[in-house]
Length: 426
Image (cartoon, rainbow, N blue to C red):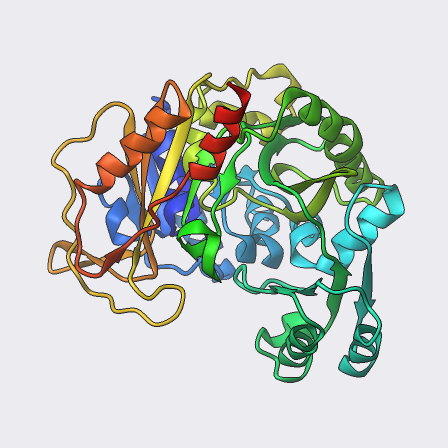
């Protein structure tokens, strides 16, 4: 069976390694993939946003099943195009991917169907937005409506910062057309939780919860990044909170999308904040999160391809989705200077052999004269599983010590906050 995975980062590498476990799969292509994936799939130099070229490749190479992983191709309608060719896909169609593609849409959806989220206002011009900010509660959160590589959200701690954010998005167009409309919303406080979920539009099966570490430096200092590491499960996400989220957020969201004629099939990511007034939605993503996927999939005991196929066929309720009782930690090794200026082109040295509980998912690398060299800000994720979170964290950092490249940088406190929560419970 020929499988195609659209995308080229650490998330896609984690998906590909999980798919490889299924004996039915004989060939996996990654479009475009990256140099660090060479032992796990065949990389094809077609960009994830080149929908026509992706479709042509799929037809020519008789692809039996496709996984469209990143947000851009989903929002652009890659799944729609492949389905027109009769190729089964894991991922939402364009009309459903709008739940991430437009912040205005998702906020209005939650308001219409009573799904708990921050209070907000929508603006289509800078003048009205700036006028609103004269009296709006501070701190506040400014969000570009469209996709912005995960950078379209600014938490403004002062009125001046809020105004600068509006001007940069709406007048300076730092995010292009994504900033034509913006959302200004209430600043929420509480622990954050990421919950990825499988859904076929009829039922929803949450995966194990996780905790991302967005800031570049230790102690949650420095600039926001795409994620410097993750742990799973998230200690704040108790069974009681999970039950409340299923009742008030997960199922209502699936039902709301069905009511809007936008049935969602694929992986729906819930970015949650556990406030003093209960869990609320910060954001939806229409796909697997990155780097959350890197700790969630290693804990999946069920076969990923079987689950994905069940989602695509609308048979998720008939399929077991089981996770292990252990924990996982992913430490991102980045190029020093990320997320601002950094140098690349340095050879990466990997350990000769990985232990059973270890994984390396490569994100920013390319092949150069037969060697794998750095080519991006987030270079790779070093992942370890363990019977407990402390074991997983120690394992991930031990794995980092076996990997080297010039200019390497990592946070040294991934999972520290989660461990503190567990220790308080003892």
